[in-house]
Image 1 (cartoon, one colour):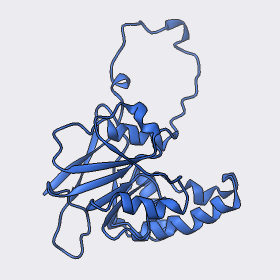
Image 2 (cartoon, one colour; image 1 turned 120 degrees about the vertical axis):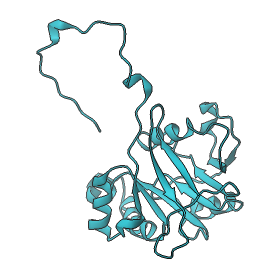
Image 3 (tube, helix red, strand yellow; image 1 turned 90 degrees about the vertical axis):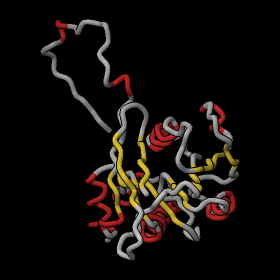
Length: 219
């Protein structure tokens, strides 16, 4: 049984997480009887928040699997049709290690869109790793605790996860090289593209600026 996983709004790039009875393949199957818990507490963060909002835009009925959303109140501004369980725990804290598993106790699988996943969650765990910037550029982290948290949690959670979604081949290779993660449990799913980037507007291009140099940053 297979389930396509959409990333981002609009025209999506899709991948399969494929079920297998082999002990050598631990990828996750999303069967109709299963319930997936999704942590959306970072929905209004930059970067990861955009990723979460893109995923949520594709949570439209009918779904082939049931799901629960875990937030902490701000997601009411997203106009979601789904009920959101309130989890009163800040990101990168101790409480989330306890309250997320409690909130998701009826779920068969958790999807955490960052490395702050519950280490002692007893069932299937999928995490999205966007990059390893918190390991490679630790001087930019705001505190000693933040550096300690990243140094401890990133290696532990990448070993604990049953499957890891990487947003690029570069991130996958970095996980393998830097942390020794097994390549076969990393699934590369690129970010999607919003529809307005794929449509041509009515305005004519400004020919006077046609030959001007410009710098394009894709971050």
